[in-house]
Image 1: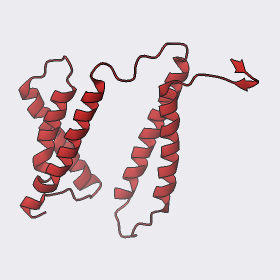
Image 2 (image 1 turned 120 degrees about the horizontal axis):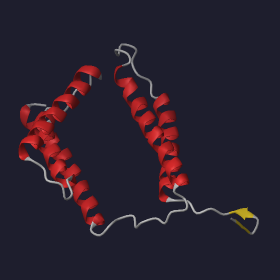
Image 3 (image 1 turned 135 degrees about the horizontal axis):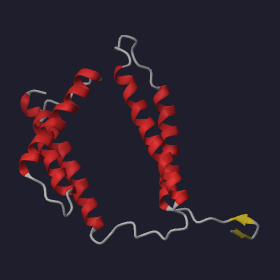
Image 4 (image 1 turned 90 degrees about the horizontal axis):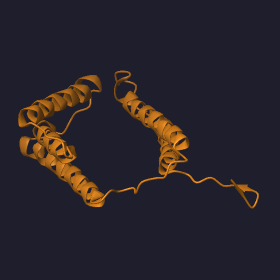
Length: 164
């Protein structure tokens, strides 16, 4: 445990990720507090969204640190299983395509298709039924739309092709 009088403990990836997450939360919390918003905004409205996200990331980071500490004696598996880098790259490219498509087609048209694509991408060895995928995609799109437009009063992209 001690090497050359210095405490030596191998940090697991979970702990490192949790610490980085907490530091990132602290930084963005500080930055968010520096942003001045007009007083006419409905409260809590859009100003609350970053704090909710930071809270969730902070709680997740603390959970990762605790998990990493509890599992410190266990041997870690490789970070990416076989083919993992390719899968992460594919998912990232899907996000980029979604962002570009949303610019031209808008949120309402692209999000159901993107959700379905992500369901099929993340299904692994599980069987996914097309009817379930369509229902989930439409419900997710509707909930996200309602949350952003009505709860947070944030205008979502309508798409360049549709006058947005």
